[in-house]
Image (cartoon, rainbow, N blue to C red; front, side):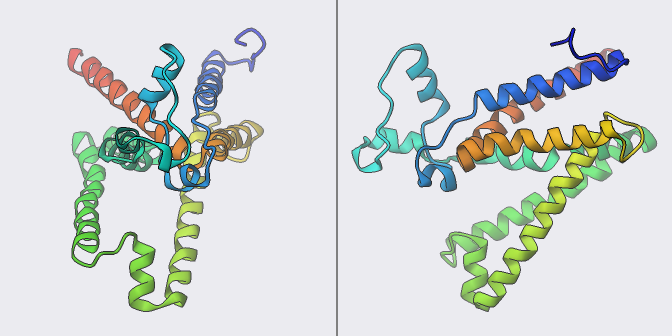
Length: 237
């Protein structure tokens, strides 16, 4: 692959190889959802159960929840250690990392902390979500909006979320594209933007919420490892 990919710039060749291998690994390891419950709710066979099935040949849990043991049901549910890394990695990749790096390069460590201060909103959002669930009994924010303000408000809220998430997707692809071309709207810029959008679209279509959550956990672990390595290199210098 490295021999066939020659763009005239060794750094650019390496960057494209990283993206292609990264996408290949995520797509190949994606957990394919076989039921609507897995696709939309994220429940399903855990990574440990999948490894047990591949390595040791242990039986896979039944797809029908009524035929699963209590332990299998518990392991299939989306727990804290799945949701937590998924939530934080979703927000810091890739625009936030790039922005904090820019602020840090311009203003030093204060710039990095200033941008990271935005994430203090996680705690206020967590408090609101906790109160909505425990005191009001709502299972989701759209449900709360519909109950309090009516179906029209819920529709407007959904449209607003769609627009915000759509903007978030393309703003992140624009950040990725900026690593592959110093100028915008060039063929290399467009190619990297589309490839970086197609990769997650592919594995999400294969597994829905389940594959998205699992890939988020893997990427969160990778992000923490890289953070430790970078901090170690900075400290050594």
